[in-house]
Amino acid sequence: MSKPRSRGGDGSALLILGLMLTALGGGLLVERVVGIPATDALWRLWPLLLVVLGIKVLVDHYAARPAPPKEKP
Image 1 (cartoon, helix red, strand yellow):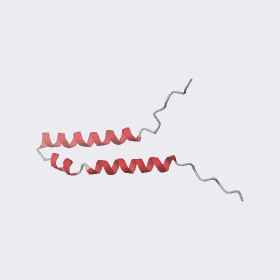
Image 2 (cartoon, rainbow, N blue to C red):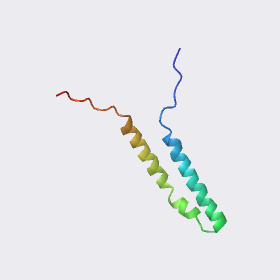
Image 3 (cartoon, rainbow, N blue to C red):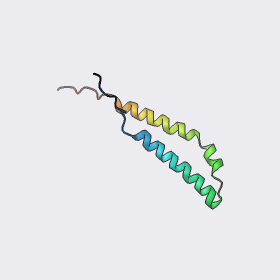
Image 4 (cartoon, one colour):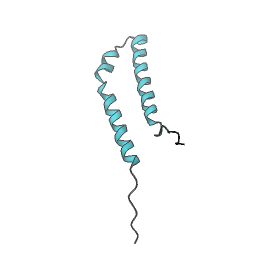
């Protein structure tokens, strides 16, 4: 029998996704309720999503690296 697969990770991807969706929803709500145009600003800042995801990939990569062996004196 094989082991069941684990999702792996620490849930930081879901945290980032949740934060981005909250920011998107908040911006759209401000536009709707207050009348401040947020759609244009959100559209201009979409590359920030790629930057955040790239940083997350780099952090996960370096966090998963094994620690170097300790030298004995």
